[in-house]
Amino acid sequence: MSTYSAIPNDLEAFWMPFTANQQFKSNPRMLVSAENMHYKSQDGRDILDGTAGLWCVNAGHKREKIVSAIQAQVEELDYAPAFQMGHPKAFALANKLVEITPEDMNHVFFTNSGSESVETALKIAIAYQRMRGEASRTRLIGRERGYHGVNFGGISVGGIVNNRKMFGALLSGVDHLPHTHLPDLNSFSKGQPEHGLELANDLERIIKLHDASTIAAVIVEPVSGSTGVLIPPVGYLERLRALCDHYGILLIFDEVITGFGRLGTPFAADYFGVVPDIICAAKGLTNGIIPMGAVIVKDEIYTQFMTGPKDTIELFHGYTYSGNPVAAAAAIATLEVYEEDDLFLRASELAAHWQEALHSLADHPFVIDIRNIGLIGAIELEPIQEHPTKRAFSAFLRAFERGCLIRTTGDIIALSPPLIINKAQIDELVACIGDVLSELE
Ligand code: PLP
Image (tube, rainbow, N blue to C red; front, side):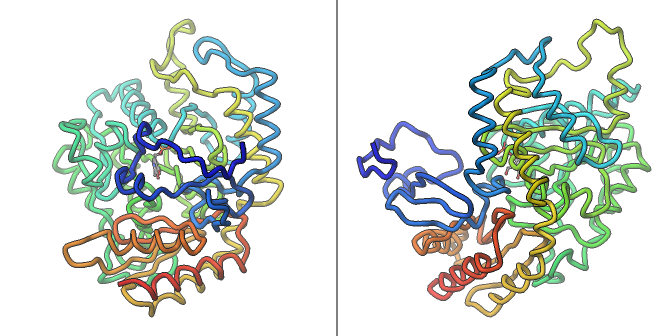
C-alpha cells in the first residue's frame, strides 16, 4: 500500500494529545514521511519544517546513520531489563553524553521523555537534600509560565494555567517565581532582553516566606519554549545561581528544548555560562526518533547517594525503558551526527541571519513583538478581542496550506527549525510567514 494512500482512516479511536480533536478530525492534517528539512503531507506536498517536529529533530529528518543504528540494534539486542541488569549501549551512551555536559556533571539517569526527566530531577533533588542531612528541604520552586511536561510534579512546578486547572490538587509545598515576560520594556529585543534581572530577586522573597531550610530546588527553563519563547533577561540566570548557592538550594535547568545545540552550544548552560546542579534533557537526545530522556547531575549529587551499604539500591526510582537498548543506539548515533556535522555550532553560525530575517516581519499587521535567541524565534500577535489564540492558530493553518510547519502557543508563533536549515530555507520560512501575516484578519 502506498504511503500516500487516500484510503480514509477512522480517526475516532485515537485521542490526540494537546489537540482540538473535534476540529482536527473534521479537517485532518496528516504527515506521512520526512527527509532532511521537509515533511511530506498526505496529499503529497513538501512541508518545510520550521519547528524541528516538536523542538526535537535537531539534525533533520531521516538521518541515515541514526536509522541504520536503530535497525542494527533491533537485530542485536531488542530489550534488556533495566533493573539489576545492564547492557553495553546504555553505559556507552552515558559516557558519550557526559563528554558534552558541563564540567562536574558526569552522571546520567535515563528516562523516556521530558516529563519523566522532570519528575526524576525533582525526586533526586528532594532525596539528595535528605541524604545530605537536610530532610526538611522538600519544597520546590518553579516559575509562572514555566512548562515542565505534563506529569503531576511537572504541572505543579509549571506555570501554565490550562495545564493545571483541570487536575485537582497538585503537589503541595510548591511556590512560583514570577515569569520574565515584560513586553512593555523588552519588545522586539534581539538575544537576551535588557530588563528583568530584578525578577530573580523574588526568590529571596519566597525564601523569606518559607525559610531556606524548607526549599530543595528551583527549576526553570533557561529559555521557556512552550509558553511562547521567554528569553532570560541579562544577568537573570546568574542571579538565580548566586541565590541558590547562597541558600543551599539546588538549581535545575529544564533543557528539554535548549539542549543539543539549539542555542549554538551543547546546552544552554554553556551558552549563558551558568551551570546548574541538575539538567533535564530529552527530545534532541535521539533526534526525536525514539522516546528517551536523561537527567544529568553534578558529581557531588551522585556521590552523595553512593555512600550507603554496597548491596542496597540507592535510589528507588526507574523506568522499564530507562536506557532502552534501541533508544540508546539511536542516541549514540545522534550524538555522532551532531559531532560529525558540527551541529552544535550551527545555531550560532546562523543566528545573525535568523535574527535579521525574523525581525524583517516587524511591520506586518498584528505583530506586537518579535524575539529571538540561537535558532529560536517568536512572533507575538495581537489577540482577537474575546477570542485569544484564534489569530495565531489561523496563521498556523494557513502556513501549513502554504507548505510550512510552524507552531503556535497562545497568540505566539514559535519557531525552532532543525539545525541543518540553510539561509535560503530561513528566508523561505520567513517569506511564508510574511505572506500568512498579510492575510490575517
Ligand atoms: N520540559 C520542557 C522545557 C519542554 O519543552 C517539554 C516539552 O516540550 C517537556 C519538559 C516535556 O517533554 P515531553 O513532552 O517529552 O514529556
